[in-house]
Every structure is written in structure tokens, then in C-alpha cells.
Amino acid sequence: MRLKRIFIPIFLLMVLLAAYNPFMKNTDSNTCTDLNMEVSTSLADPTLHVVSTEYPFLYVGKISSKHSAKLGEWIRIYIVVGNAGNATAYNIKIVDADYPSWTFETLNYSREYHIPQIAPNVSITISYQLRIINTHQKNVSLGRVLVQYEDRDGKKYESISEELIISIKFEAELDLDKTRKIFLTSIMLITALPSLGLIWIERKTLMEYLHQKRERK
Image (cartoon, rainbow, N blue to C red; front, side, top):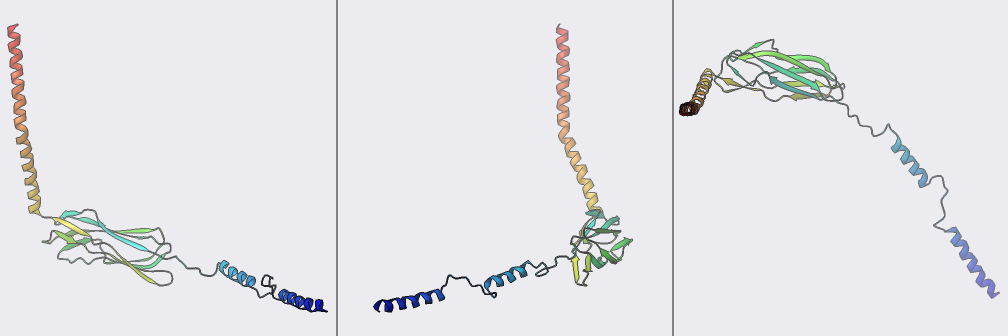
């Protein structure tokens, strides 16, 4: 009887421990394993979290055939517009500087240019001629070029070039350059003449010495 009393509590304790075992695996369908599978499937879906990186990017440059010119001398101006993006640019509007007629004279010039589209890795060049006919400034600004354009969704962008500056050579400066060149040439001749004279004297002395030596023989 005493043995039964001891055995029954031990048996009940073993049953309780078997019912509450933290190391037993849960086989319910709504487990964390199923949840992890859903998450990984969502992350593996290629249609989610996709960000488009296709957009046009137009660069613009304004350059000249000469960095300096005389008054009235014709120079050629180049406008270069290129697409460095990975999408086509549409409805391109190019706006150049305005040249007052009392200072500039132009040939084949237009203030605005309109281009339907520029594809990626494509560039265009616009050129015209210009001369400065009246100014008192040493450096004359030819302004900048503005480019406005859109992507395929109609979003607007714009780019602007660096300012183009031309140095003017006035007649007085040209005369000064000529005078400077003549002066430098004269200095070189003056410096060189004594050396030439010494060479001539040494040659004459050598010839006299050789002549005297022959007479002694």
C-alpha cells in the first residue's frame, strides 16, 4: 500500500512532464516555418521594390574657334548638346544668348532651336559665325546656352552651359606687340654682335699668325 502511494504521484508527474515538453516540435500548419516561407517568397518576387533608373540627361557646351580676336574679326561659335542619360530626351528647346546689334554682327544665327528628341549617347552640334564690331571692354561675354527638355512621362529638366568669354585685341595692343617684337629682336642682335666681332678678330689673328709662321719657314 505504501508502495502504491509513492508510485502514483511519480506516474502523474511523468505524465505532466510528457504533456509539457518545450523541446517537442509543433506540427501545426500555422507555424513560424510557414510564415518564413511566405516572407522569403515575397522577397523573391521580382515585381516588388523595383525602382526605374531610366532618365535623360542632356549636357550643353558653348565654345568658339578662337579665344581672342580683333574687332571685326569673324569667329565661329559651336553649341554642342548631348544625351549622357539612358533614356531619350523629348521636346528639346535650346535658347542661346541675345547679341545686341550695336555690338555684334552674326551670320546664320538663331536665338532658339527646337529639336524633337535626342536618344542616349547621341549629340548634335549647332554652329554660326559672329564678330564683335564695337566694344571698349578687354573681355567680352558671349553668354550661356540654356537647354530645356522632357522625359517620356513629361517631366521637365534643364541644363545650362558655362559662360563663353572672348578676349579682344585692340589696334593699340597689336602695335605694342609689334614694337615689343622689334625691340626684342634688336636686343638679340645687339647682344650677338660683340660675339660676332670677337669671332672675326680671333679669325683674323689666327690668319696673321699662320701667315707669319709660313714666312719664317
